[in-house]
Image (cartoon, rainbow, N blue to C red):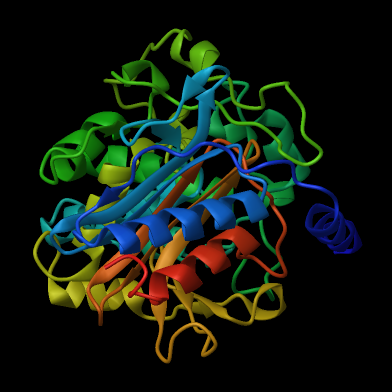
Length: 383
């Protein structure tokens, strides 16, 4: 907590350099003065939060209404509107959308005991279900062994121990381990690899180019940098990730595919907007399913009293932003800050994907996401 406060103070007070170049905005309104104001406001917001590169897309049920790209995707490579990003924990909401579709189709029951599906057991003293994995109420914890082992290709059975189990008296704790285990459960239920499931049941029906394997991206995938203190060293090297061997993506492997759904989705702004639109109103999912996803299953408590936990979804209750609940998810990883948020009442939303931004925050939501949400709620700026 003290470390975060020191970071917040430093990142806000120290010089920020000059505003970076931004691309020609996508702007459906024909008012050129309004378009100029939109570009200036978003550019200032990005500068204030030390953004290295970003794409912000404001959308409604018909698609992107306004979009601005800013800065660089890679060294010497400008961002453009179709640039892909590793969306970090926004992947959890994307995965939840697919899991709920499987539930509607009768392929996966979100209230089934996962021990009846998986080829291994989770014996942490609780009945673990897909619902509890998606609401972080499964009693799982990102212990020291998880953070040490993840990414080493160790089997998931190496992590099913007390170090990664939550104390019995705690209902909720945000867990990447739990978010990743959902992919394994989906593989067991659908008898297919997680990537194939996501393509067949989510991305293709919504006409989205996205993947959990960077090697499959056809366009530019953005790097990611730590912007404060800034370093030229890449924390996420897109070229290096895209050159890795891609063995086993098309085969189910519940023992090793626990490192995908928690944060590895690679997607562009248009795809993120399509996900947001699918979660705003019935169509891809039924009204009953969407209502279940938006129902509070737990509170973030002292971590952030503005937030409650839905199914794969943050519920944002902040009367200073909107008089009713907003929904979405945030992603923080490798210096990148991402967000996808939507408003079912107004039928619109905003997507943020970055190659690096300030990680200042008071609570869970990053300052840049809060400021972008506030700008989104000022609909006269972008509609």
